[in-house]
Length: 258
Image (cartoon, rainbow, N blue to C red; front, top):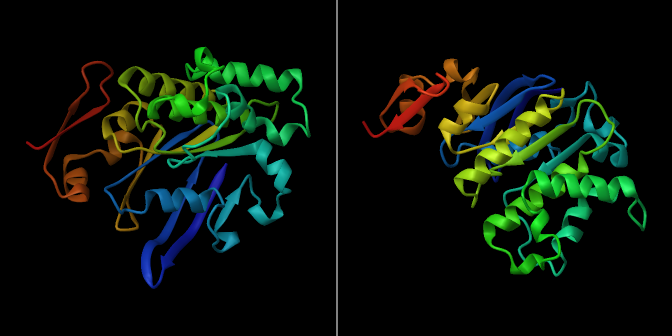
């Protein structure tokens, strides 16, 4: 689905990422983790083609982004950002409809409205459809933007890709798990998701592969069992931890501070 070749990035001579190489398969959920300042969001922005870089360093479906038609590309990939405009004087349903803009010119079609309704139900914002966006809590706004991104990729295109930068911010435990199950259902249909998370235990529970960054470099990349070891995590975060089997599903359970 996506290949990264020797990605390096610096701002004002300060190196943020250095020599990043990896690939993501169809139907895979890749979670990017690492301490603050590791370069997680910068890497996601580079992969999503939102930051200028050497175009040949990222291949999406075997093509550089320069080779894609811009409008067609919006049918194949979408991105959820951790920072969204907090002042949008629209109803919730109209914010979610923004995700369908690549599919119509002036008036949304029935399939657009069906996609909007489905996305709102998946993110539990359907009861808020007629609410003013600005009246919502931070977590509710977060879910509205997730619905917008899901609506964008509700189409007949095979093998879609979604980028998610800390999508669980401000969400309670119920909605964190609900969103992660929605993303797993998305990848279960042959699509791909690349997500930045801070919660290592949620990453261990839901990720197919984990990419651990520190100081702009890859520390470890593989299945959760391979990445989440006591030595690797303690060193990456400069904080002691123990790893034990999760009693629910036997995935790694990380406990810090022991």
